[in-house]
Amino acid sequence: METIDKYRTIRKPSKGLFRDRGSRFIAIALPVASQALVKELLESYRKEYHDARHHCYAWIIGPGKEQWRINDDGEPSGTAGKPILGQINSNDLTNILIVVIRYFGGTLLGTSGLINAYRSAAADAIKNSEIVECTVNAYYTIKFPYAVLNDVMRIIKEEDLLQSDQLFELECSLKVGFRLSHKDRIIRRLSAVPGLAAWFEGNL
Image 1 (cartoon, rainbow, N blue to C red):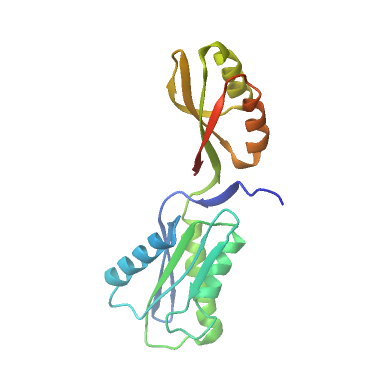
Image 2: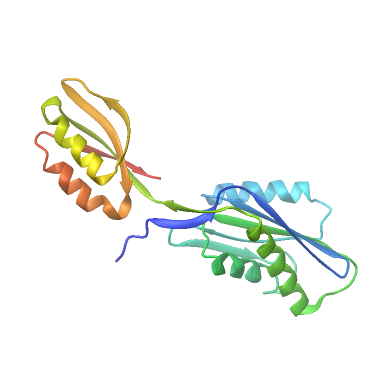
């Protein structure tokens, strides 16, 4: 199975707006990395826009879009959360929450009108965002004798590894990072260096 180690998301929050027959649909797109943050943000916007009729949303989390949820918040089923999610998917985004807040204008829009409104508001928020491509990286702390420092640094240079926390003494150590899909090859190369030991630090 292919390792998914890159994904598209938005760099920072953005807003969109759609109006139809007196109703206002305010869309807010936000980068998120956990369900806990999603919950916190939703509670925050419900308080900020407490006088709005509906707070509908969709979110997706994970490089492979493993987690997702939609909510129509009282609108007819399938008319709000689903079209918001559709815009997220059509732009191939993840680690994103889009909330669309509706101020009712007094005129019913019907099923097709609602779908168009929530879709258009979400699309406007995405259009106003900065989309970035991110990678999922694995991080290891490696320790090795000073005598093999040149061998280690050559691998770091050839593989273009991230590095931090360097300590170069008789016993050297540093943290290296690389794309998750490159892990097997890089660990194999590092493991071939005499006296080198590695400890997994986790993924970002």
